[in-house]
Image 1 (tube, rainbow, N blue to C red):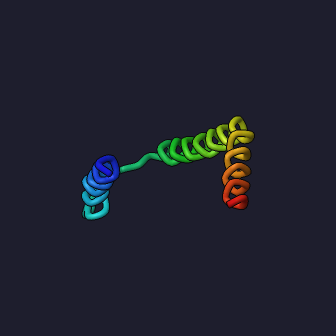
Image 2 (cartoon, rainbow, N blue to C red; image 1 turned 90 degrees about the horizontal axis):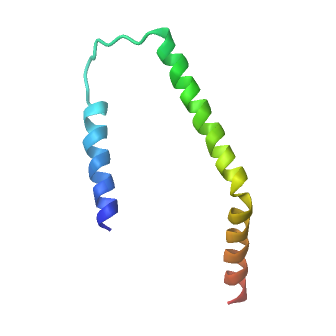
Length: 72
């Protein structure tokens, strides 16, 4: 319970100033967009790899969950 409150408190603390900010007068060079794109692709592929390596555990969890629920 405390962890959830702490998470939401931090989320609001970080999200509000970012969303309510006015003109930043900032400059993003073309390399920044490329870097952000690379990070997103790497995160997606990392997620796929994680699912692939743990697929049997994920499958077993859902099979056991629904089989136990059905037997009751």
